[in-house]
Length: 135
Image 1 (cartoon, rainbow, N blue to C red):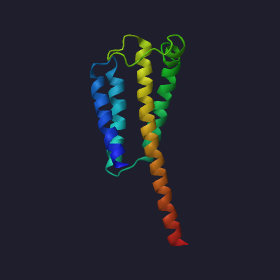
Image 2 (cartoon, one colour; image 1 turned 90 degrees about the vertical axis):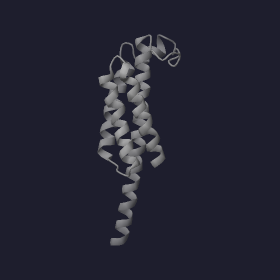
Image 3 (cartoon, rainbow, N blue to C red; image 1 turned 180 degrees about the vertical axis):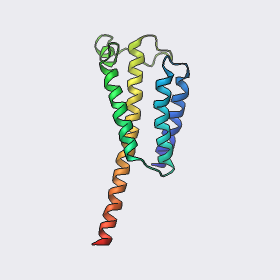
Image 4 (tube, rainbow, N blue to C red; image 1 turned 45 degrees about the vertical axis):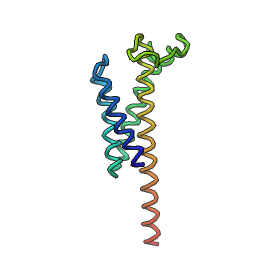
């Protein structure tokens, strides 16, 4: 888990840095830095189950919005035949920008979910040990 979290902490910092010249860096830099901070903390052995849930639900809410937005993911899939979103660095159309942002949120959700599950399993194991000592 430590390597997983170090890798994603570094990736999320890089993703945040790449947002500097984005049309909305004030939204995306904090989102990616949120993931970087909690991956960094997890790599150091500090897990925050509640904050993972908060991040998961916040990103999930924004992802749902981006999916159904006027130029969102649904539009990209149905009206634009899921055209290549990785062809150029600069997004030339709004549906490409929204779709890329959606997948960025998806990555953060998955990483936070992995940490949430790991933390839950770790705590459950600790509780079982404690119960065995008592009983």
